[in-house]
Amino acid sequence: EQYEPTDIVNSRFTIVENIINTSIQNKDSKIKDAVLEQYKKQDEDLRAVSYKLLVESFNNKYKNLSVEQKGLLKEYINNINNTGKLNDYVEIEITNLANQLKEVGSKISDKVTKIKLAETISNIKKIKSVKKIKEQHLSALMMTYELLSELKDKLK
Image 1: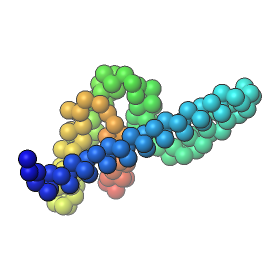
Image 2: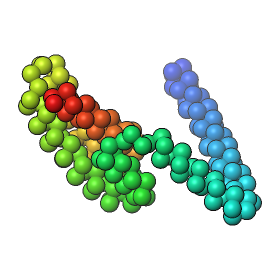
Image 3: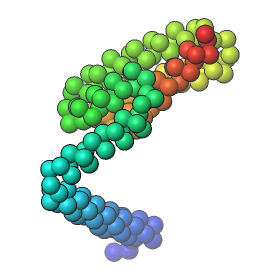
C-alpha cells in the first residue's frame, strides 16, 4: 500500500518527538530524584538553614506583590492538587477583578484603552471554564491585578 509523503514525514516527526520528550522527562525525573536524595543525606540543621534561605529568597522576590496577588499565589501553592477549591477561589477572584476593571473602565475616556480593557475582561473570564488552573492562568491573573493597580493609580 502507498502512503502519502506528508503522512510518512508527520509520522516520523511524531515518533521522534515522543522519543525526545520521553528521554527528557526521564532525565528530569532522574535529576529530581538525585537532588532529593542529596537533600535527604544532609543533616537536619543544614536542611533547616536551606529551607530558611529558600523562604527568604521567595519572600524577597515576591515582596512587591499586592495583597490580592499574594492571596492568589498562596491559594495556588496551598491548593495546587485540590483543583476544586482552587477553581472556586479563582472564579470568585475573576468575578471581582472583572467588576473592578469595569468600574475603572467607566472612568476612562480613551477608546483604545477601553477596547483593550474589554478584551482583558473577556480573556480572564475564559479562565473560569478551565478544568485545571495552570501557571499561565495564574500569570494572566497576576498581570491583570497589576494592570488594575496601574489604572487605579492613573485615575487618582
